[in-house]
Length: 68
Image (tube, rainbow, N blue to C red; front, side):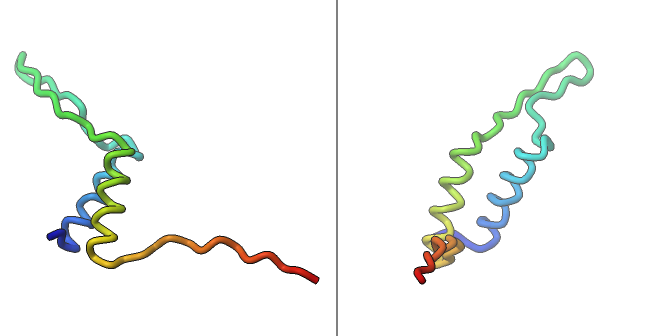
């Protein structure tokens, strides 16, 4: 079961990825550590799945046309 805290962490990861804050690799003292950056599509899919499990619907309705 997904928790609200996990959903918030997913949203924060997406924001970090979009704003360039995700560190991909770090080199210190001759040692290199690499981190795998999640893809935006995977994050969006995980966020949508978590929202549906939690019953959160944030989808906007399409605009209604006006007829005269």
